[in-house]
Length: 115
Length: 115
Image (cartoon, rainbow over all chains, first blue to last red; front, side, top):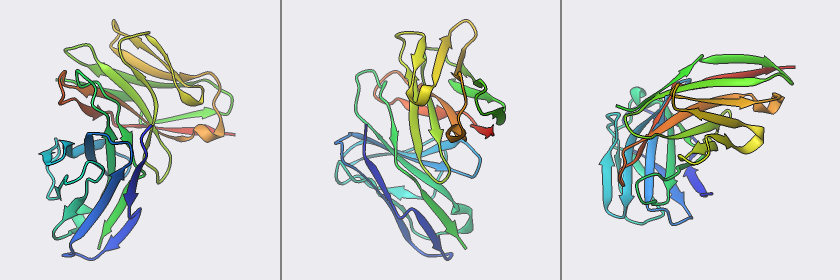
C-alpha cells in the first residue's frame, strides 16, 4: 500500500492569492493523479501524470496547473485563487501494471476554502 | 462509455444489521471495479477490487462484493454493521485498456449506522 502525503490538510485563503498544494509519495509509483471533490459529491479527475515530465489534463476542466519534476512529488498550483476553487483536492498514486489495470491509493486530501 | 451508478445516496441500518450498498456499471469491455470508503475529513481507502478473477471478492473490515455480469452489478455487503462503518462509500470503474487507465467514480453512498 502506498504512503501518500498531502500538505496542507486545511487551507483558508483570500481571493487572488497564489497557492500550491503539495503531494508526495514514498513508494516510487510512476502514476499520480489529482481529483477534485465537492462536499457530498463524487471525485472528478483534474490532472494526471504517468511519470517525470509527463502531465495531462483530466476529465474536469480546472484552472490549476501541475508539474512532475521528481517521481515522488506532484504539486498542484493555483495562480490566482477564487471562491469557485473552494473544494477538497485529493491526490492519488499507482504503480504501473501492464494493461493499465493498476490500483490507485489516495492521500488524506487538502480542504481548500477561498474567501 | 464506461460509467458507474450507485443506487441510494443515503443508506441507514441498525447496528448488527446487514449492509447492502448498490453499484451498477456500464462498460463495453470487461470492467475493473473498486469500492473505496471515505471517513470524514479523510482521503479514500481501498476496500476491495474486482480484477476478473473470482466473482466474489473479499475486502477489509468484513466487507465483500459480488461481480454479476448478467446484472452489470457490483454490490457491496457486510453481514453485520458496526458503528465504525459509518462513512461515505464510492464505487469506481477503471476505463481504458492500456497504460491510460483512469477511474470513474459513482456519486457515493453515505452509510449511517444507528445504535
